[in-house]
Length: 284
Ligand code: GUN
Image 1 (cartoon, rainbow, N blue to C red):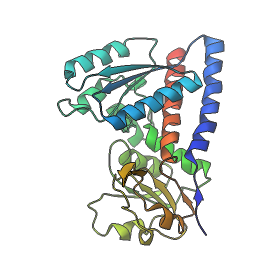
Image 2: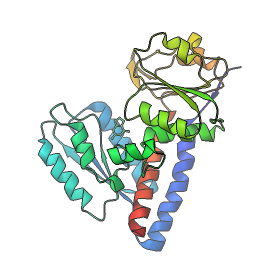
Image 3: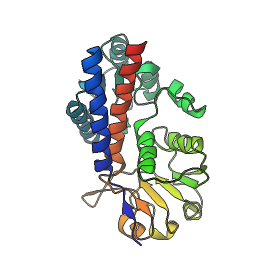
């Protein structure tokens, strides 16, 4: 039987409605508006689209968002000074530095400059370390979105074999730790993994974040598997994921489309983190 499609747009719409209610409550009861500062360096077209989508979502639910657009040749010191200023600004609750950064900038140094309590992207070592011990302040939006999609679909995670293809700090590694925390048996693969198909065929839950179109074909997927495609690739003039969608959808029980799967839920998770950062700042 063909897979059920996990409609990320619909799930994100419902999540954003809930977040919006909470934002309105905060404004009414505490006269505070959650606020997100977004730093975009350079003119990478994909990053510009992501930042625009995030800004639009903020606007729709009443989160204030300020964009800091810096030229590609900006000195690292200027970014660090800006982050320092935003760290000290009580009216800013979340700070996001859009990745990738230009090659002359040390990405880790910039990400580590963000206060962990404002790190709504979950990329600071304190938050990544928190994830390792099962107690992060913030979880990165994409891994959090993947877990949200699985939960919304009612997928049982405990005891299942989850295979994550991709080991990035943004998606693969945090997703593996979240799945472990939920008591899955987790295998992490890479595009260099020998006999990748052997591993993916074991997966009850298959998460693919490798950035390679059609990396996962139907023979690589177990009948009834849940398939989460995190890839976003431009291929033959279209946006596609890492999974060969139509044939894999014939075998899977659930599958996310690209676009319209993980992406919109990721944005909703960022909004949720920003709301959470604001609440914590108000309570502190
Ligand atoms: N670039 C690709 N994905 C992300 C993300 O989740 N956050 C940031 N800041 N940059 C990205």
